[in-house]
Image (tube, rainbow, N blue to C red; front, side, top):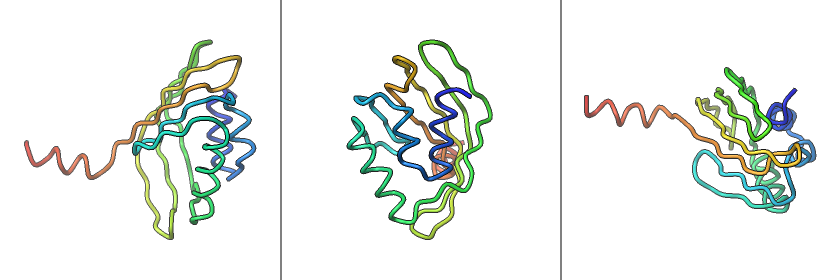
Length: 122
């Protein structure tokens, strides 16, 4: 299991400590919708708040994962509920590693809204 697999497993289990265990203390996480979190304190607040607001990972399926000593990339489908609303979207993660942990993680999302907007110009 790669470190990115462990990070995703922590989210699936709704386990803040497991998520933080995969990250360097000074890591940077850029969420797919834009927010940037720096360091364990901010990431712990973000994850805890998301969970407290009825955030639940139903499934996070990785379709393609590539790993090297410097970093990992993955394409995935994220299925979740938040504030009582169930949603799903496809995305990708680019991660950098330092001493066997994630030091930088950036997520990108592809949403239906983007596809609909692009269709207006075809």
